[in-house]
Amino acid sequence: MTTTFLDQSTDGDSRKDAENTSETLSNLIENTDYGILRKTPNYDVKIQRQRTHARPPGEGRPVFIICCYDPRTDPAAELVLKHINYAGLFLQVRVAGGRAIDALRSLITAHYMFHLEVIAVVHHTFCGCTSFTLSTISETLAKEDNIHINEEILNGECIKALTIENLNKSVKDDMKLIRERVASPNAKILGFVFDIRTGELIPIE
Ligand SMILES: [Zn+2]
Image (spheres, rainbow, N blue to C red):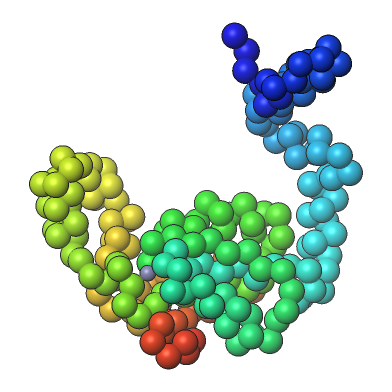
């Protein structure tokens, strides 16, 4: 039996619509090649890129912000925008600790689309990632849930960002990682620590 998003339809036309919709969705889902975006009505990724890249600096290119997924850091993005006196579009990736390694894929796609000029990384005080060590988390997960962090991860660069021992260093390390991996030479890489006690955003040079 084929399940569609419109399974509740009862009349003939609706059923036919449902079948058409299902077929269209199937095509969209199956054909995830480069051309898929260009098939979106009134949207052409090449034109979009040309227009975006042609805009003067600061106009129409979103600021990219990487921040911890801890909800206590919700105000951080707005503070970053305020700090740089910018009121336009921004893109935000929120991951554990706000570590840049998790955001590289999203950074690459955003840079491709928008030619990013400003990328900000925000870590924060009392982050969960400062509350355990690598041995603590690996031994505890193994003991409690029989989850074993595999060797590939343990020996990879992700593991270096799993814990935070020093906020000043972790922010600087992530700024360096972004510069080396995805940023254009002219892009500004900004780093901050957000103090959840005071609500202050502290720039890291
Ligand atoms: Zn955190």
